[in-house]
Image 1: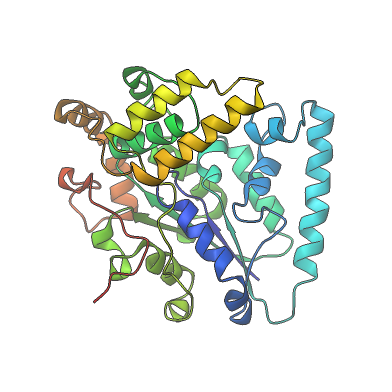
Image 2: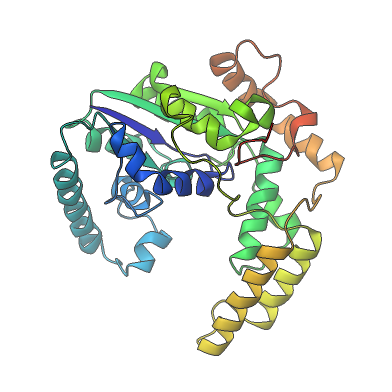
Length: 324
């Protein structure tokens, strides 16, 4: 059996990809592909948590109130059993399983954690395809800031961007990909730039489906709305104002409801480019990652002169197929 792991990275249309996989579960099954359910209804988040070190503080464990090491170890045993039961009960025609989570990128930061992914899959799979999209770091950071604001956190813009350095696993793609290469081998990695000019039909979803199997491109429904779009400048300002008026940590149900309602309205109506970064800051970030990005280019994009051309940073990215 083959395993396809879509590991992100974060801020590269992962929610749209996962929505596409969920929408097309039946069509995937008919073609011999199974999008694993026990790992998470849409995002294979539970599989990531299974592979994480138990002593890490993480929102997945907090949300399930798995606070002690014993509780997290029990979760890991339960998940292993659930995963085994699901995979071993698949119909005979299934030849490929699929997992997708941007948290594979952001949460698994050590070699041992990535090794657990392999250990989870090895009893069932002998062939692996690790799909990963990369976004230029300054654009990724700007999009991440927008998501942080929408989640209800108040973070000064300047402080947030201080974390965008090569020392941060989240942004250093050379460091991150080297872990997956060591565990699964270079031949198993399918790495792409998050750039509409490189996508099949200029569509992220068509491009992703093609990487699963070219035969599925005209079979699956990829006409989905874009998920988790970034806020524009007005959206950022209003979202931070809402955070100050209705604290995320308030115990009042009424305040919580008002905050969520306001944020949903803002997220629906005030999306687009925010132009948070000055050209000077963009250049500073781009230069900081020149060495690590060059390592990635040489290994995965040897035919390109540069991994992230400056002019490509803020191109709009389609999830739908472009109408001809």
